[in-house]
Length: 291
Image (cartoon, rainbow, N blue to C red):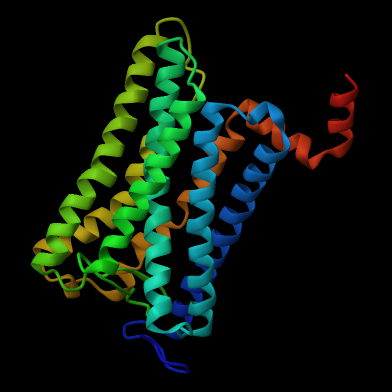
């Protein structure tokens, strides 16, 4: 961990400032867009549907990722971690839990959309609530395991944010990594790809699918894939052979996922986009009520 007034190993003054600035921009954009999405769900009755509940779950998890990035950004700009070892464990748990919830929520949305558009039966409240409950319970469970000894949270190479410690590369980390990655990355990615592929095959015959069937899977793969590759490399080789600056790249990429998700799932949805516009335009909201 970088102490006050000193630079982390492998980083210069401008590099620390650059990482902190990028994290700050990602945090503010993600928090702003997802908070607006959450506000619109609360204020617009049209959005209170089972399928949109899954989008709300994603917005909540992405807001948590952005909040985690905001803490990392302020610490990076301070050039030290001011919250102690217990704060590091809490920061690691919160970031890991919301990241897993974001990945699994994306898979739940993909399945929900396939169910809605391809089976022609609406997603009911019991199923949607059960999915959201399972996503958050599962994410909290996997994120709590490093606190209980299977895996471990520690500082990122910059020393100003905390995540799953991949520097050890021992059997404890390897067993946790492969088990966690299967259930929380490969399986959600498989569900997402298959759901949208089936939608394309069925709806492509009659016209263009009503939702973007390419971006969600690409976001999961490109947004979280670099982290997966870094963890995989740490499990089979000496991760210290990778420079600290390069090790920070996956974290910076992942912190941009909340902004991309908000653009795709919220601004990319006509109904949610209309709800956001109504929240931002009180006059339009009053006209709609009068009508």
